[in-house]
Image (tube, rainbow, N blue to C red):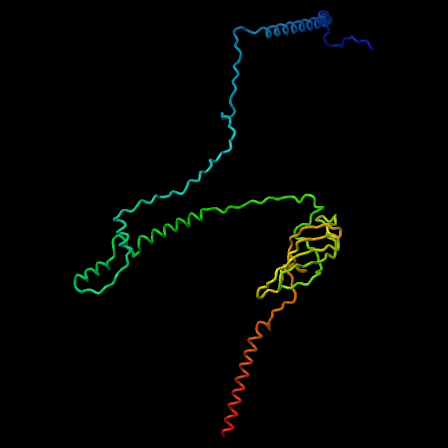
Length: 316
């Protein structure tokens, strides 16, 4: 590093020795001043911290005020279900009928008595009586008997009471069939071929044979094999206009000897009740005698007329 050039410039003021000494002593002074400042700062900090740790006796703690942000509301009670009181059906008030007095009975009998017309003397008294009878009464503005009004009011009350009576409905219960392996449900169609003829003249029995197997309700088990014989009964006496005969099947017998009790009516292939066939109306038995009588009568009248014509020609 180059040495400082202390050669003074001509015409300028030169540095004195006192100022040079002060400049030489300035670093020491600076260091001392810095140390004094640091010590003073540390002392001031310790003093201030000590003063804060000791609370003053004269100072009072600050009062904290908590402000209410919303209006005060009472706690809501849980809503309880409203229990409606049971309605008590009061009986229909019945007014007790008082026993009519004897005078009331006579008055009622006089009002209900028939009017008797008779021929009397015509005079001013009779005319006044007719006028008084024709004049309207103050008690009844219309010609209606009180008994009729009472009966109509009673009928209206009875009709109103009938209208207030509700319709009572009966409930129904559902059930299960259970094990369907051994059940033939109602409405199952069982085809059967007749073995005997039917005649409605007299009641009797009929039989038929099943031409296919009859399965259970679920179709798993054969309950009646092919060839099962079914026996039934029918009653004669068809009414006028009927063309179908009612037959009731009573019992079934399988080829294995199992007997099953039935109570099923016979139907045709379309499911209509009864069995149809040729109907003998006995037309000749009913109208033959009448026709024969009319023919005989006409023949005799014709023969007599011919005989009379022959007699007239012979006389001429």
